[in-house]
Image (cartoon, rainbow, N blue to C red; front, top):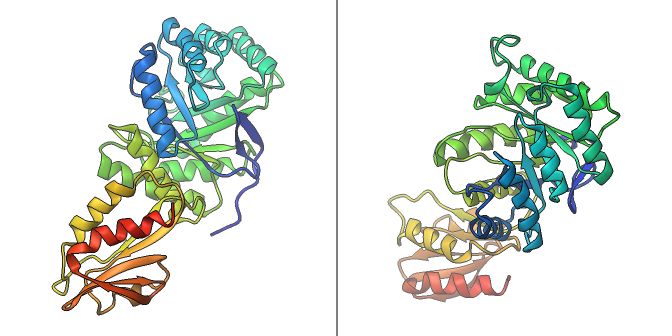
Length: 349
């Protein structure tokens, strides 16, 4: 993996983005922001899953004012207010205690409105995210949502803020097309040094979204590009965080949670590998400490193929074995596989 790009850094609440900071995970609430109880419950669930920053949709003044209530009632994550078109919503959100803004300055028709937002953010050191989506480019100026068009749009929007001597900026260049998203981010890093928020937008249902985001985000992170990420999935945002953690863990960037090494199964398997894996994942999903566990269907290659696992199981004709780093340490009845795995994981909590 290439050395990570050294970007400028900004802070969303207590979370640093860019510079030497770890890559952070973001998600977005699905509840109406004005429903304080439901929104707080969702944010707390996201925090437990490993989310670092949460974005709130702000479609109206009531939503902007709700930010203050959310913060006062113990919101566990820094919040970014997502603003479109109405600059007043940005000002209210800042006054309500938002830790960051997501805006598209091109949607704000008057320069003085941008100035007002910048003045409000400067006073509180609140960063602004310039969010460029391929699907929302000005079609009169950019007939095709190319990577070049996305970068040009971002630079134009950044220029509005730099003109006001404002540099607490992070940038996102998103598309539902993975290749376009990758190319746009590669182009951008040659032109500016602002921190980048990575994601494949409107990626769709779970399986498709997991693949698209893993390829797009993963490819850029492997090249050392990216400072914070959001995996976009249609549905439960907790699954966004789970996939984001797996992407970071797979690249060695955020080693936490239980990583499963499991065989694809074949005619040699001696037990229901898939069923045991699924149940074990459910029972250990909340563990944050990193541990690698192998669940192998037979003893032919099991311990050897999972030799770097902290511990694991494999099953032969005479029953199951527990092994650690490839060495068999215990034999037990095969109907106790799940019990033994859960007992072992308790020692790593």
